[in-house]
Every structure is written in C-alpha cells, then in structure tokens.
Length: 109
Image (cartoon, rainbow, N blue to C red):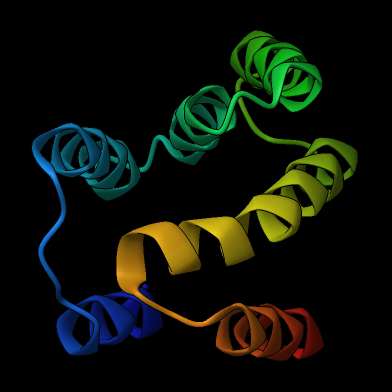
C-alpha cells in the first residue's frame, strides 16, 4: 500500500530493540501479503487475547477457504481499525488524535 510506505517514510524514529524486532516481523508479514498473520501478531503484542483468538479463527477459515471471504474481511477490518491507532502511536510516533483521524480517513475510503 503506497500510503503505508509514505507514512513510514515520514514517521521514522528510534525504537528500542524489542519494538524494532516486532516491527520488522510485522512489516515482513505485511510485505509478504500475510496481513491476517500480521494482525494476529499485533493482537498478541498488545495482549488483546480476545482479538487474537478471533484472528486465529479468521486466519484458519481464510486458509480453509483458500481466500478471504467478504464477511471475514469485514471482521478482520474491524480488528485492524481497532488496533491501528495504538500501532501508529507506539510505532510511528503519531499523537492519539492524529492516529484516530488517520483511521477515520481510512474508513471513509
């Protein structure tokens, strides 16, 4: 996603070793088009056990069906939109207000 790459370029800042290791793993998964796995990892990182469990099921059904059905995509998007503000604050240096606005703008697309 070009927008993500632009956001990354303009929000570079130093992360501690553990955060950088997680971010590298997360970005590798998204670069490999493994978005469900990346989101599941993010759920686990933020210790959102209920969301992580939902992502485990969504990912299993995605694998079983061979594609991500629209109803599963909608569920995954809900989880993604719920976690994106925290991700942007923690890993990209956004303020909470900037992160919320960014997500609202994404939802409007």
